[in-house]
Image (tube, rainbow, N blue to C red; front, side, top):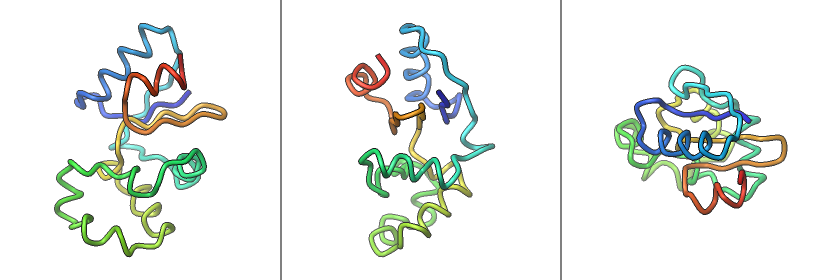
Length: 115
């Protein structure tokens, strides 16, 4: 599994702790240095997430770029290109397995998906 995250993020640390406790192997990728590729973001969309679910709505970049107003009218392709170019905009963690994807961390979703 690949886990895109940020070491200073409390949510990412909770997800890593959960994965470690459940002995789920993962490769950690710093999302700020190497954001997910568009094809990986499309996997999340195919898994049922919406474009808006992929954005870190509490992040400074989201506010600075006024994404709250821009996102509703933005084509999906443009949104994915923006996310793939700026890891600070991406909701974290994003965990990608062979046929599984989770965005963010909620213990019950991790239990169901990775447990």
